[in-house]
Length: 471
Image (cartoon, rainbow, N blue to C red):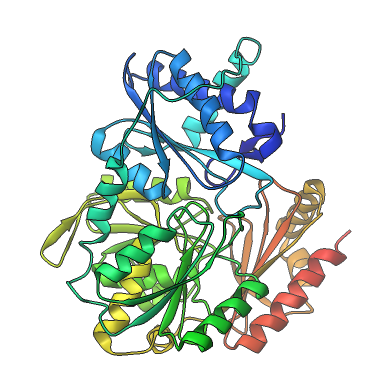
């Protein structure tokens, strides 16, 4: 069984997950809830899903597992992950989202939420132990849910996102919405229109399209550029399959990086402390100030960092990842209203914050982005790179400064480094190169920062060549 936990949730091939693994891990989750006193027999478990072809079957297996544990399966339908999490937090009940996020349709996943929010790494370990214990006794039972939430989850989230900006805040803006196959596509169109924007839906698809908002493909950028020109747009917005990662493109169709969207949103909210992974842009500290905590990659690590900050008495604490998914750890006052904490990735808040600030300032989205003066960043991965090879490379680079200097000689001289997640090296010329092996796939990632786009492209190409050349 090849399913495993990634940076956010359980992942695996759809053909494999839609069977015993879904039943096993859903049962493990229910048993964990009951053991920890986080649920009692008869309590509801909310279940939602994305538009992947395999998601309805996996949901039906989860319904069966929930019912076998004496709990009640509530079908919330197809809707954004942050909407599901928002409802679970409000009702104080656990929930699961059937989604593979941005990965291809031949794969899928399950995201688990306690009544208090996303599970953490300790919870993942507990679920894995339960799965091992239950492996020989769990059976697959595909069944219908006990009940439907009848739109209550969507209604609650709509109320939240339609209170973020003043009335008619986007009046006069012409915004394209790349709908593709995201569960948030109609909700986003309706939300932008409610703020007075002239909304142009484009690219709707009934077949599942995996849109990665952190590494936007050249084909997607070409589509965005074409739509921006054809419709004379002020910007385009979109999201990944389960609507927890945003995509915002400027008036020319060029996407803004997710960590820039996070910084823009933090400023929009008046945040006092940011928690973000080490892979987010190094210019964030310069633009925001010293109250930035860096973590390993993945929402569980960001949430853990935010929780620690809250325990230390910090207020107005937010987090975001390089993919743009934005989290709030504490209530925040906005336009005289209280925005409740939502410590899970949300794409709607950064989209609305960016468009709202652009409209309020009278600037183009590209001009708003330039105001933040972040280094140019780029990232790519080398695929079919055995995990043993990745481990060997990282061991070699960490063994001595001489090894590191020799390896990086073609691109620059190491100045200082961070070993939080992978190896992130600031070179003497101020450029940054970061090598990070995947935790669950035969891939090696390379992230770079430089002063210009040409320098970043060159450094990224050289960094990938160094990875490929290592034996």
